Image 1 (cartoon, rainbow, N blue to C red):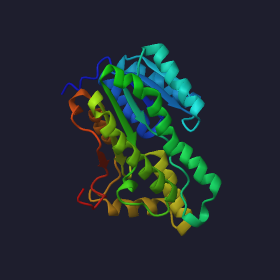
Image 2 (tube, rainbow, N blue to C red):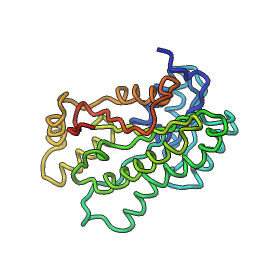
Image 3 (cartoon, helix red, strand yellow):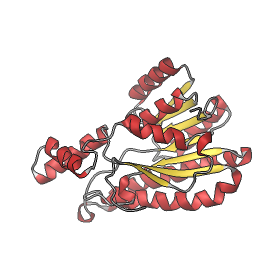
Length: 263
């Protein structure tokens, strides 16, 4: 299937590893040029080199923290200077600390808001006007299964990713007449460093091993295993593609059947 991504320019946040890297690799394999940002410059540089060598597409890497509005502006400016535009935006960020309401203070709430919600708003604000002007654009937000079924001990993620969902659904209606789609993709328990960290946090809280925590999650998943980043990335690439031109305002889980709701 030709996804119509050859020659498109995609900006993928938090793309040096995990789900962000998997999405970047999939988009590059479909012929899209890439602008990747992440906080760790060394790992980001290695990721850019590996993707460019494997696919032959141009890849621009910029070390940046999406929780900082000045960094967001710098990334989009660099993308525009190099490629002239951004056709596809994939918002993504590392997860905030685990914790319950009583264990989280004002500083943690503020930091998580900047990381999970404000970063999406600022990235979208920076690229949307030119998408509307050209009559084509794809905005895809990486959120979480927690927006449909909250995950215990993830108060910050449950709350703020739900806020992103509300913003994205409202925006989708506003920009649909301009040929711009806005969707959310919801990763379940996927084999990434983030999930390893959550397993360790759960283990420390409950006095069990990290393997036992992971096994408990796998038992809750109908497929009885964690997802792989490439499985997530396949849907992400489709939602960013020309083929998905009539899909907007959706929140699609990639979770092995973990969510039990009908919709």
